[in-house]
Length: 174
Image (cartoon, rainbow, N blue to C red; front, side):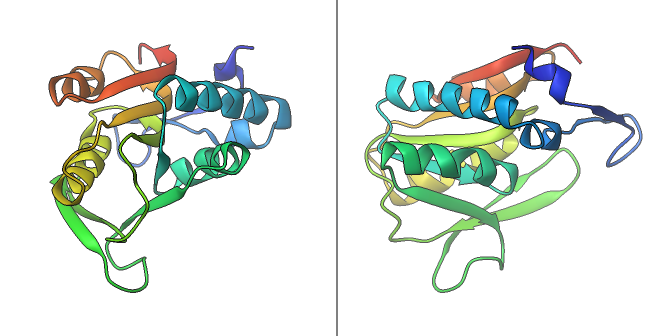
């Protein structure tokens, strides 16, 4: 299946010069969504995942059914102020601004968390998530899986440089 057939590209969104890969087209097609979830399930097995750490917000959608199927904990990483109760935080630079992410400090991350997101561009969000995990759970072997990797951008190189094993389901030259 060519998953990109289900991913319209929206030019100049959220700002001029950015092409937005809209993965909601995958979600609107049950066969395409199932195909992506099957691939993520394979990645979770390959990396011996102890949990799926889903990045807001599209990572939630892809990780949730896979975590349920595999019987793994689903850990949510959200923007500041979106999770109730005590949280741990990490601030980082995005393509557009500075942002802060949070997660619960007692989440059952385990020794091999797999970070799940829809798209890898600069790698900032996944690296921030890895830094957040490493700041609280020191002895973790972190990996990541994304549906779309924009391979002409530095995300993959950045993740590898920060000792994060990763895979992209579809590699795209933007």
